[in-house]
Structures are given as structure tokens and as C-alpha cells.
Length: 160
Image (cartoon, rainbow, N blue to C red; front, top):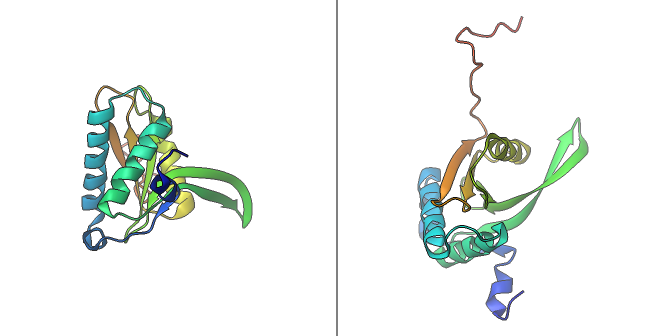
């Protein structure tokens, strides 16, 4: 990539496991990642390509000793057959894993949320975080694989 030989090493994975990162709850980890993203947004501002923010978050995670993988392949199966492939931007790989999807657009929309929930379903990871660097202020949204919203009707569904 660039002229910094150490940068290529964090290009795909950071394997250092810091003691504190091992003890974090998923909420603490999510808050720490959001704090890193806010710092990146404060320094860089909006408007860069998503890959710039991606690399910046890799630098922050590596500096904090939080192990992660970048550009993680996700296979989707139907009845045991591979039917599709996706790529998650990042997955933090300690304890309870956290999938991170980065955006650089005007606003987080429902399609971004559905994308992350689909990634969570395909991977079995419970928690996902959407970070949008494209707006004047950092936007973020936490998603959980296990949460399913109720139907719009207030009546319970009768499935029989």
C-alpha cells in the first residue's frame, strides 16, 4: 500500500489481544469503537471515500490493541448449498464479536440496517454497528441479530 511498512501488516488483521479488550462487555466495546469513529470524524471530517475511514479505523483499533479482521468474507447457504457471498467491512474478534459496516453517505437508511442484519444472520454474530462518516456529524446505529420487531399491527400474529 503506502510507504509505511507497518501499515500493510494491519491491512487484513490485527492479532494483538490487549488485556482490557478481553474484559470488555459488548456495550463497552461498542462505545469504544464509536469513540474511535468520532475521533476519526473530528480529525478527517466528512466527504472522504469509505476506504479512507476504513483504514483510519484499522489504525485506531490496532493502537488500542483490539483484535479485528478486515474485509471478512461471508458465505450464505440455503439447504446446505452456497447461494451467495458478501464481505463485511470489519469484525472485532474478541469475546463477543462485533461486526462493523462503514458508510460514507448522506444518511443511514433502512437498506443499510437490513444489510447488517443479513450479515449478522449469515455469520451468527449477535451484534453489528453501522458507522456513517459522510454526514456533518458521525452517525451510528447498533443492530442485533436476535432482535425481531413485531408486526405493525398491535394484535398478535396467529400462525395456525
